[in-house]
Amino acid sequence: MRENTAPGLRMKTRRAVTEALADTALDLFDSRGFDQVTVADVVAAAGISQRSFFRYFSNKEDVVFGDRIPSAEEVRDELLRHIDDAPAWDALRATFRTAALQMDADEGRWKRATRVICHTPGLRARYLEKHLAWTDALTPEIASRIGGDGPNGSGGPDAELRAHTMINTALGCFDVALVRWADGGTDLSLAALVDDVFGFVRFPHA
Picture: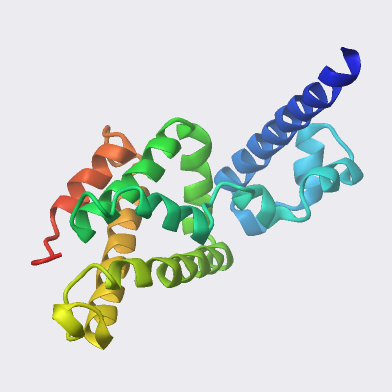
């Protein structure tokens, strides 16, 4: 029985240490600025060695991103849960609202990570790379479901252009809500903000 439970306990311990170390680093990044904090600063605050730090993270950037940012495949899979039962724009809103609910559940850590990303040009660029990957993954799914100049009013280059426009608008809406939430400019949850911001935009016949 001990052999069956030990790996699970070790995994839980590793996750707990990883999260505690990330919290210490994010506090420093948020208060001092990401570029002003070194790995040496983080390990001194955490009371561990640099060797121990690199057991959990390959670099400072991984502390901020870790496995927090969904992959393109995960975002596409979430969209597919909604796209058959709702117009494309509503399906995008539901997709990003799901992400917002997950972030609301870990509010403190996500708000700090978001502020650090938004206030650090290098991290912001890496985050935008994620946007591009999401757009590439979502475009075929949206384009196949909205009108265009292909057969029966669907598909074709016009549908792809409209899909790109819609997806990038959705990403912009999500970012507006995310920054407002992270900077403390509202008492609303991120999910509620996403609903509000997406509600400002309408895509006819989508």
